[in-house]
Image (cartoon, rainbow, N blue to C red):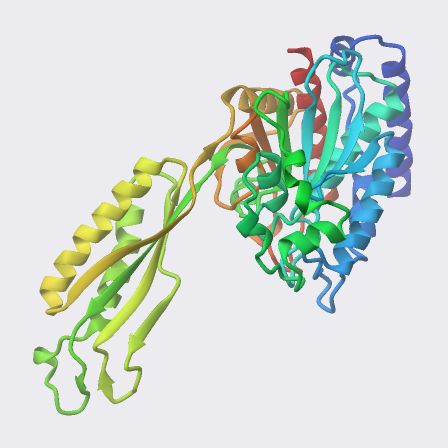
Length: 442
């Protein structure tokens, strides 16, 4: 292992020496055909492990929720890594950390890339963290190689991703006064938390970047699912972040004595709900596509073991990259619920709860550049949707946006057991860097 590390270090220094002698990013990319500039897996792992100290819990994961003391300490660690990578570090009024590296043409908009370091309660050490450490690694490699891009580069650590994408929402001008009053997992309101991070909620509009102010945004992230691992693939080229819609269905039957009511004469709301739940799964499976439909909450009334349930209320969530598909899937499920109601002698009524998020496709040009970068580095790819939300879905509203996925072992995320290998993290950072250089040439 030590020999491998020394060889990697020597190779990195050799690549850096080549790059220093080159005057343009185009020449750097050309030189990489024979000696690709690649991320150091050992350094990324060391940075991941360093960050894991802040908010570490007994299970080996982290409770580094946004605006907590652990979050604040972790952010100071990240700022120091940014400075070591040659970045000028500031905190904007929304609490986002921005590490900037000037380009040769001051008139060009910056290329933005990064992710977040806040966690869910009982989270792991890779969700968000890999994107931040991969972005810093890309900046570090350019710094060591002395490569100056045409565009300014900005590494971003978004504030409070897990609590509602609040940092990226502020950057696109969508963080409302009402949102600032929401109490976060830290016990502080979002506004109080922003102030604790060094931001200024009273000047939140200053964090806004209008359309055109950013050349492009790239986010490296763990997949949080098992597709890449199951297929033994290196890189996911994200096609977009799915939209999410929620409904609630109320099923009304007749509560009656469980011992004296014959089976044939029952109007059991829970039996009707069971048929509907199976139908939701069947309808989603039979329809071609990558949508998902889930019943995640159900309650039966009166809830006694000796009473036939007279009323059931349950949820339905549907996700897909296409809003039309979401609506068509719901229409088919609602139609089937009518059939179930007729068969079971019950009544069913639907209520739309919310559209938690609308589909956010990534930019087709960014997908092509990511895919080309991966293949030029000898890595395998798969175009795929993201079933989870990310800051990228906000940035896609104001600038061309791309996402790079790397494998999550076992598809586990939001858990101390989540894991991505150093080699996979380095692959993602290498693709990120090469994609940044390609964008810079456009």
